Amino acid sequence: MLRTAIYPGSFDPLTNGHLDVVQRAAKLFDRVVVAVAKNEGKNPLFTLKERVALVKQSVPHLPNVEADAFDGLLVDYVVAKEARAIVRGLRAISDFEFEFQLALMNRKLNENVETIFMMPKDTYTFLSSRIVKEIARLGGDVSQFVPSHVQTALLKKLKPKK
Image 1 (cartoon, rainbow, N blue to C red):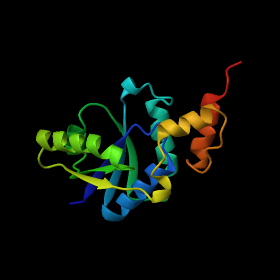
Image 2: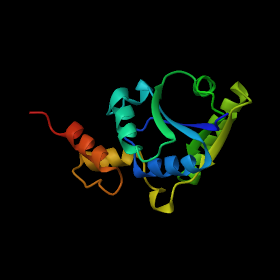
Image 3: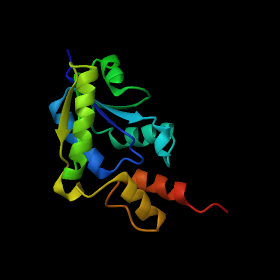
Image 4: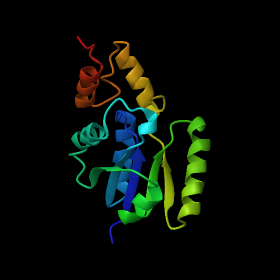
């Protein structure tokens, strides 16, 4: 049986910090599914389909990684994908409390699903999708924070409408 992990998130957009966690998880698990959450409550900049496509374009060099979309309870998705673990990235102490609560709730919902916390490289600990979008909105250079195709998609999406 394959050791499968689910790396869930909004990925609006995918950053180099996210990719760092994906690459680390790909070394530990036979199969990693980057699961893009529908979560319309967050008012995403990119559609669900666009976010999944951006993830897919970012991981072709990782043969054991795939991108997918999900809606509903994460633990139900984990079971449907026959996975055993949820991978969550922790950038800073401030992330820990919220992530810890989610992990405990997921364990309460399904005790067979484990949560693994992974820290990105220290060069990415400050990075978030929200910050990247704000820099891009204000005309800043995000090339060091996201893959080039994500930067292109951001610039296209944020281009002023005529």
